[in-house]
Image 1 (spheres, each protein chain N blue to C red):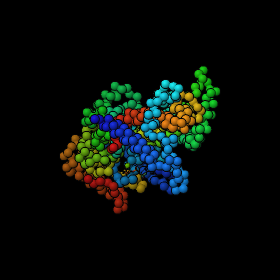
Image 2 (image 1 turned 45 degrees about the vertical axis):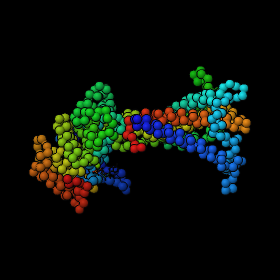
Image 3 (image 1 turned 90 degrees about the horizontal axis):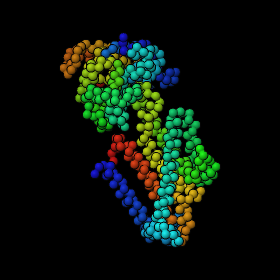
Image 4 (image 1 turned 30 degrees about the vertical axis):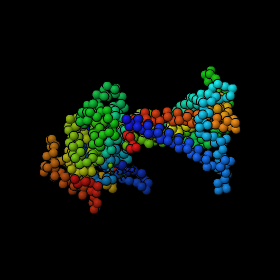
Length: 267
Length: 292
Ligand SMILES: Nc1ncnc2c1ncn2[C@@H]1O[C@H](COP(=O)(O)OP(=O)(O)OP(=O)(O)O)[C@@H](O)[C@H]1O
Ligand SMILES: [Mg+2]
């Protein structure tokens, strides 16, 4: 059974008005359990919109979203997914540990269980000594790790991430990518990941979904044939470059005009 | 020294310097200002600088150490302090009622847009009603009230007037604060399927705190003004307001006397502001410090 199943999805903002936007047109995608899928495409092609539809933070104009075998709404109510955004979005007034406990609190877990889980998550993201710190006392990369810990705290089967490493420097970013992969391998979490970076998408994913704008749609899905453990040497393998090339070509082909692929980083 | 102690020391020394500065200005004006007032650019605005209108600072201070009346033994500083303490308690009650009502109204308005649209204009209008006109009314209503077998005490009317002025900044500030929670955080709470109350207490109120603290500061001084004006206009005994009108009547014979009471009122305002400042330090202790 696939963890996410999106079929014939359409999303039109401001329908019937002069500022109507066809954000997504006839999008179908299914993500298998344990799979890592990236969404890539130029700015405005509807990546965030697709992620929000899966998260049930938006209602589709038409089409179906099934998450963990349920309607998207039921999945949200059951907290079947965790979410992380470009900005860590931690609450300033809560300690790191309390931030991670937030989703558990809302689920009604008792205090001891919550604290034990927060500690476990902090070990996972390698920040055990920072549980009592406040978010603003942490570096950007550390904050992002806390946000990931929070997203994973309830052990959701699905993780939705919208450019979570966008604000980080290149070194931290590569480090975080490796950590994310190892966390997902440990927990068996399924991930849908939005990014602007082709190498990031290829390095992380089993499949890279290439999208194009106006109207937003899926133009190609690239299978990344890098099996097994990924590490630093992965970035030098021929399969890695092959996948990068096919994603880039798909991005070029997708738009059909000179600016196709604008806003996508080629590093 | 800890940064907090440093801040407190710096703030209080600034305060003392400011006081000395005002005192110096006062005395300077007494030297250069016209004895019987005067006109500036044809308008009669320069105050009189004679000792009856503007007593010397040292006369005011030494007045504290003399008895209130020639017939009594009680030094005036005791009387003023007791009056300030009385009014302080009334203001505190008014502040508590006002902030509670203000926060509740703001929450209601944040929850239901209809309430905001319907209520907010009336709240604004309520603040234009002159307090002097309202005070005797509230006192006379209060006199007829009996709550759960208790008779409505007269002092409570003064507190209610304080609350009437205090609730407004709190309602407006809190409403702003409650809607200041950022979009991403709200979406996060949504993604957790959090209920409105859960979002209120875990996100909206904490985000509102930086807006509520300044509102509380306004409310603190508003409640003092409300109480003192109510005391003056209804003649309620025991508070600093009453002392001010009584002493003002003696201004011709004993001009320094009314100033002792006026400073008492200022002290009262300071005490309220101090309370709010302490609250501020407490609730903001774990927030990022802005560079000062
Ligand atoms: N709430 C909204 N109301 C109206 N239009 C919207 C709304 N959200 C998104 N859109 C429009 O939908 C389109 C897709 O937006 P979306 O945010 O999904 O793009 P994106 O692929 O995530 O872009 P980026 O890479 O810049 O984040 C854009 O044209 C945007 O203007
Ligand atoms: Mg986006």
